[in-house]
Image: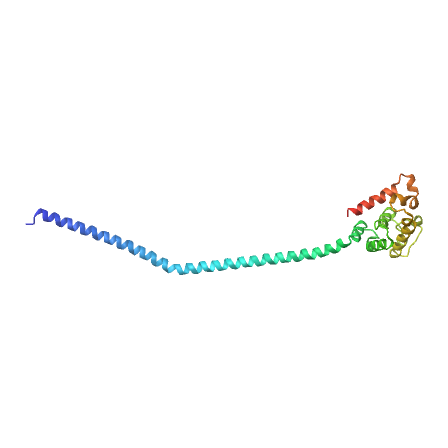
Length: 219
């Protein structure tokens, strides 16, 4: 017959053995899980690295492409600005033909703006005088017989010129010799000789010429 103490000891040993075995099994299971996770990580890490490298390469390529595109746009803009600056430089070199052309826009004299400025310089008169008088006397040729080419009211419209090209130098020479050379330079000084009836009406002729002068200064 086995003593009671011996039976209790055996039960305790068996219980401890089972508990230890269970603990070992749980530890083994946990280690296997960790090992599986590590194995999965090791298996997918190269693929992740390759994927990340490819993404970085694509991103860098897009950045370079964007930089190149922006550089091209900046270059194109600079080129356009340079061309525009050259065009503007040409206009600024002598803007008077453009001013006269805008002032005479839509009139028979508009195509002759360059000639008006050139001839005015040749005779040493204000380049605004020929177009301003033409606008006052006939709407710059719009209100006269087209065959007369007399937009300046010479001889009350009785004078006929062969062409606008022929008329402009004659008008410039007349203004130079009959007015400017005699000290009649401003519209107020020119008016008593050029348009005597305007004196009786309050000097409207000179006022209109000065108005046209100011218009050209703002164009």
